[in-house]
Amino acid sequence: MLVAGMVLGIGMSAYAVDIKVYTEEWSGAKYDYQQNITSHDDLEAWNNTYDVSNDIFGFELVARRFYFNAENGFNGKVKNSMGDQDLEISDFKFGCRVVRNDFCTFDIFNGLLIVDGIKDYSDDDDVFVSLTLGGNLNIYLGDYLRLQGCIEVPLAGEVYAYNTKACLLLTPNFGLTVGYRGYKIVDDEEDGAYTYEDWNYVYHNYDESSTSKLNGLTMGIELNF
Image 1 (cartoon, rainbow, N blue to C red):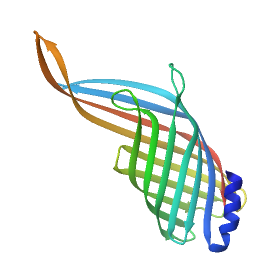
Image 2 (image 1 turned 90 degrees about the vertical axis):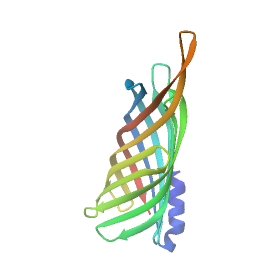
Image 3 (image 1 turned 180 degrees about the vertical axis):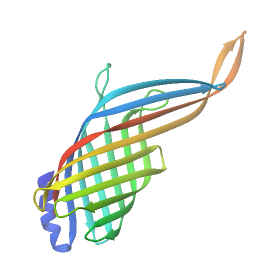
C-alpha cells in the first residue's frame, strides 16, 4: 500500500496535489464498556474493560482546497476471556482546506465513520455508523516537527472520534509519528418489559443505554509527496 501511494504521489505531483500515506499501530489500547438500565428511578450499571489492538492505514489527498482522507483498520481485535473479537474501524472524510499558510493548515469536513465489533445496549455485537462533522488542524513547528489534531462529532449516529499526533520529519518526505487516538459510542434505547406479578402481566417502562470508549497510544510512519 505504501508503494502504491508513492507511485500515485509521483504521478500526481505535476498537478500540485499533496498526498500523504501513513500507518499507525494502535497497541496497548483499551475498550471500556458501560451498560446502564434505569427502571422506576433505580439504576443498575455494569462496567468491563478489554484490551484492544489495531493497525491503521491512512491516505490523505489535498488538491487546491479540496480535502479527502480515508482510514481503515486491519487485524483489529478486542481481547476478552471468551476469545478475541474482530474489530473493524473505517473513516472517510470529504471537505475543504479553509486555512493554508507556513504556520498551519485547517480543514473542515463531513465524514462517514463506521465501527464494527463493539457491543450495544443489548450486549450484542453491532455496527455503528455515523455521519460526522469535524475539523483537522496541523501546526508546523519548524521544518521537522508537525502537530496534528482532529475531532469528529456525529450529525447522525452515535460515534465520536478524536486523534492527536506529533510527526518528526527525518527527511522532507519521511517521518515518524506518535499520538493518541480515541472513539466514543453512546447508544441509548427506550424499551419495555413484562413482569409476572400476582398472575397478571404488568408493563414496566425502562431505559437501556451503553457507552463504549476506545482509546490508546499510536506509533507509526508517514510518507509525504
